[in-house]
Image (cartoon, rainbow, N blue to C red):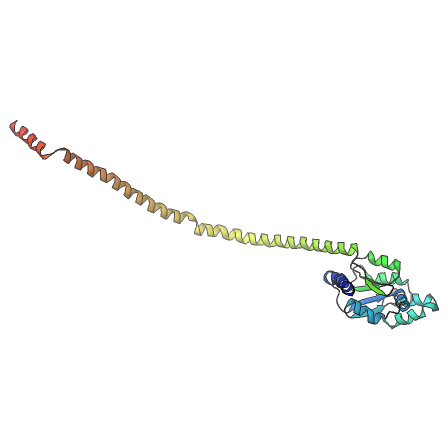
Length: 250
Ligand SMILES: [Zn+2]
């Protein structure tokens, strides 16, 4: 079971590492509700969460989250003490504190550029986080920490990013092809003109007709010789003598 859990966490964390630039130490933005649940379940956040995420973490909170806990009364003092140990990131609400969930939302901004992982048991804040792509959500299920599976919005954001990348790559490729095409189009015709098949074909043509004429002349000459020979043969010596005798007698 433990191995399966670690594989799940690796896969989920890997999604944010590969697609949203998350790096160690992971920045955990923790609120009072998470500290309260951890305290109730006797979980040491600073020890258990790095082990669960298999990496270094920074535990952070905001002044608004601390003030909210202070306002909820003495029952939450134990959780408040834990929360106060964490590094306080400036939220811009100093002097005018707002709700912890609203403060965390403003910390995330539009793109969660600081790569915060939100650690909360507040269901309203959890829903807000699920509606923001690229924001991992960590909560406790009794004693078990759970890094929630990336939301559909996060998945969609990644798909859109990839699609945009593909489009930009296509455009870049087309531009390269056009550039390459211009170069190749200029070169190819030159090569064709220089290398063109005409000289070779001319050579062949020159040779061929010569050969043909020679063969033809030979063929033509032979029958002439034969004809002459035949003519000579046709008149035998006896006949000639007889003819000569006849001529002399005449
Ligand atoms: Zn604030």
